[in-house]
Length: 266
Length: 304
Image 1 (cartoon, rainbow over the protein chains, first blue to last red):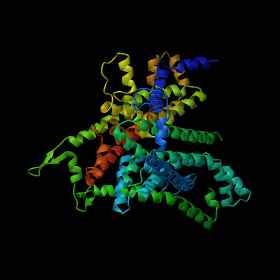
Image 2 (cartoon, one colour):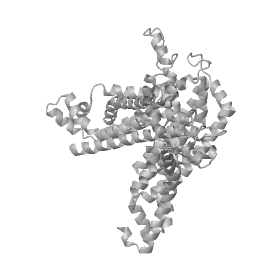
Image 3 (cartoon, rainbow over the protein chains, first blue to last red):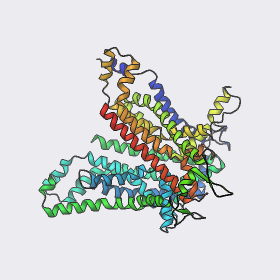
Image 4 (tube, rainbow over the protein chains, first blue to last red):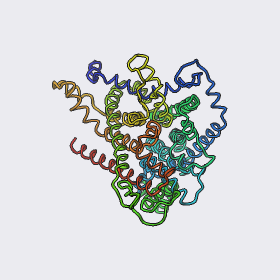
């Protein structure tokens, strides 16, 4: 009916081109970098045939392997601890009014508000002042803190979308609190937990500034290693390891997104 | 309501459970974030020790250093605009980046909001994914195409448009572009959700009343996006002003912003109180923008 006309009326000339341009702008640099990572030659500018040799070189570099292992361990532990802490906070704060609720919410989301560089130097100053030796543990602690809000938000969204009558129904059927939680709430919460964990994992894996400030000898993470490699300019090795990270985080984001969507439709 | 129905002991245990669930996360953030920031506030009023760290003696030198330089000969304070210029550059770069993001995002978000549900999902995915992709890597990717012998210059040279490569990297232009590139998704998404709620029948009504396309857009559509504009503006401006990677990698270390200046005070230059004072100023700037935007949002709500 008037649908076609309405659509036409809504359109403004040129908006579609801007939208297309916006997406091209966001992806062109990433795509160029990835394509050139398969370049055989030493030069990053001149194309001289496709090859995987830089990938092989990067994957066999023991420094990169060690940095990757560090990053993965830190991201796994930080995401897991942050998700557990965030789950507690989300359970306490959803559908529950108490004094100081706003202050609690502000505290949980504080890591999103403080500029990253300030968090980085404040963490450094804190660890040095209380006499922590900088290294693996300090990176891990700093990561747990900024991962909490990223894990919290999807879990809270999932909890808010949950049908409250389900828990009442469980109570009517003489389920204990513990049973209602483990049999009803927790299974329904799984997509929120997984996407919260994944987001925290990605954010931890991505971090450069905070890690590099609170790192010590032997606790180099992958982004720190790549940053160090940049001192020699953009080399084929930088392209290859960057492309690997690009592909890895894109896959994780898609998984997290699919889980989140699944959460919303139910 | 259910709270009242429960016996008193149960209400107490309910409270204990809530507290038990809540306090671990609050404690972690308080110890490792709130206290560190408080320590920074204190340190900004102390004297620097020679090899990093502080001397426990009250001093406002950290803040003075932003405006004044100590004269070598007679130890008097002389006005110096160097650091003020860096502060100003940070504000200006962030403001320009926010404006550019806005100019790109309004048509983009509007276009996405007028697609079919299926297409919308795909567009939103396309906009969201770059945000989650490692910022360091994205910044390297931008440097990769902007380099003197990068793809952009290759194309321009091959087309005969320029005879020598344009210097697109290692300058303020590159930093500005880097900021837009880093934070563009933050502007598109809130604007999109504002347009999503727009009732397009209003537009039809405007046309029925002989409004031109231009008038319909500026008088009907744009006012609707105000809340999205405020959110997007904050989400771009705040990370942009304290940005570290874009100026560091794309600026080639020449054109610093406040984030880099802070970082240097704790790595190379080793003046903790100065770095702490700069951090306090950055946090204050952030807070001012937050409050200003929140007030504007409140005012538009009353008027609209």
